[in-house]
Image 1 (cartoon, rainbow, N blue to C red):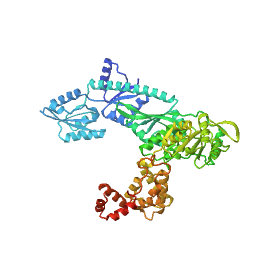
Image 2 (tube, rainbow, N blue to C red; image 1 turned 120 degrees about the vertical axis):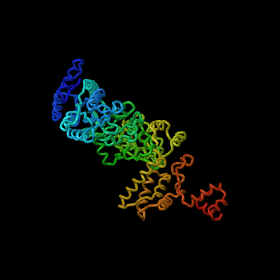
Image 3 (cartoon, rainbow, N blue to C red; image 1 turned 45 degrees about the vertical axis):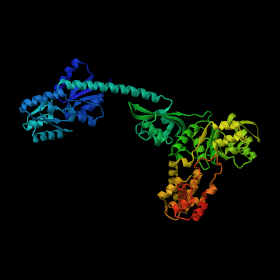
Image 4 (spheres, rainbow, N blue to C red; image 1 turned 180 degrees about the vertical axis):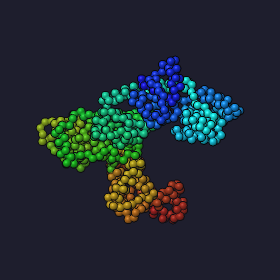
Length: 637
């Protein structure tokens, strides 16, 4: 239990307090009378002696609250006490409807809204926040025609000096009883909160997980020792910083949804100061309101630690380019499809099982693999990337299993295989053995060698086409099942309009910086770029934007220039059908050929006229022969 101290301006209030304590043993530890000018000194003295709550009145209470941090319970005149004073004032004045002025600090008085109606008076209130203000308010009350003044020491002294009728704001024991009861309730609540905080603090201090507490705005308020240890030197400086500034891998959209109470929780794998952790974010609810959230982080440990020798080898390998530079934060992810894809990739990154990454040509397949490697359990090891296309079966075997092959150079790391569908059957068998049994063999080394390697494979074939290869005997069934367990589909750019818009802006700026130029896109040009299908996805967009900026002859790039260059670089006949997708497998709308304004007008007119060429020609105000030539030009059937 805390220590409650009573500080009052008049000795008679101490007598009242003693009488109350004779009736009921309130937990009042100390009582004293003080002068207003010494209120802060007396309060600080009480605090130094262990006071946890102070009971005070009027101006003294206001001053103590202003200059100390201790909770203050204010003694407020009850409605009954004010009623007694009003009745006495009416008797003194002797008028039927006197004007009574109440002068003081607002926190001294109860609600007097209906006093005029109940007691047939005119009530005027004059409130101030300091002693000088009280004297001014008392003089103002007299100037404005009050018949009598009710107030404290300053107001009564000012009235007496002017020979003006006044009543001292004397209080009965009722107001003190209310203050004592309120102080005890506050002390109980503070004690309960301290006990709760002590339990939480002990829980946090001795938790094996890192814990971060934040307010409703996502600002960090508390960090436990384990989390400080995970974050390293930065852990001592994160209080007051925003969550996304410290945990850059966190999904900001999910964070906002949890803080707004729209999601019950959010979990993901992420990096904290280079340490892979599994994080759970949960809201802190008080009633129906979300007051903040708690992030709990559990370290994800390797099943087999990397040896010191491997670290040395890793540093050597990095000088030879066997390093992944991609990260999830470098992927544009404004669209829901990409956010969902990256969320799944974060989960996959903490597994040791192989991953099959699928997507169209030009998609961020390798960047996704690099991001998973860097967020995963083998991030200290090498990242060996190889393509399976264009190599004979023997060349594939040497590249993967030779004495200088991928499995030896990337042990304790990751091997990323592009175009995995082009692996020979013998290499497929070797890969199956490597994944399933962690073993491999080489012509140059006798016996079987054990490896600890994460395999990531990618293909630009549709998933159904890979299965057809299994049915045709061109792809091992057991390897297919091994790879397909963790399947990741990277969405094409045309299904990510928010990402496309961001990439257009980023690539425009990047190319302008590269060539020291300044160009802007008109609204029409921007719309044209967003409407184009981009069958080559990110690679095609990168190349196109670079060429556009390099060759643009004017500052403002308009729709005409954008369309002309699209038609020049990617004629519809050359880009349809796309390389690895045959017609029946190509998603609807994969290619959106660039149409000139004239072609669009002709197609629209034909549609309106149900294909009738005579009516179409009339609507376009051209001859049938001209219409026929233009239809042939644009390959319109």
